[in-house]
Amino acid sequence: MTVGSLLHRTGLRGTHLQWISLGSVGFSIGLWLRAKTVDQDERGNAERRAIFVGLWPSMLWQIGDAMRREERAGLPGRRR
Image 1 (cartoon, rainbow, N blue to C red):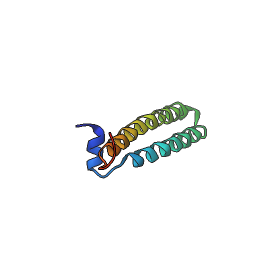
Image 2: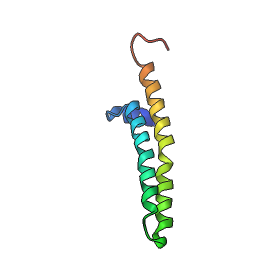
Image 3: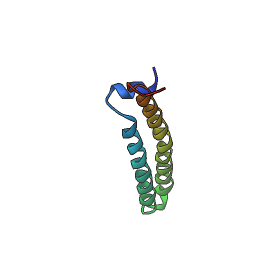
Image 4: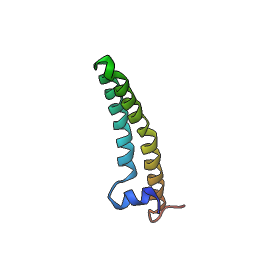
């Protein structure tokens, strides 16, 4: 059982994860811009948070892509 099949059972589709991936890019940029407005003492932590969120898009996109390939392979009438 893969992560993709577990997520598919919950109702998520590959396209959903790819949209979430794009949204997390914007979220990371927003956090990074906000980090520029906080005090110098807190700036390092805020920038690390933005970098951490910036790691999500590639993972979410890859899981979504794998799910889309599984969805296409499972469609009746399509060649594998």
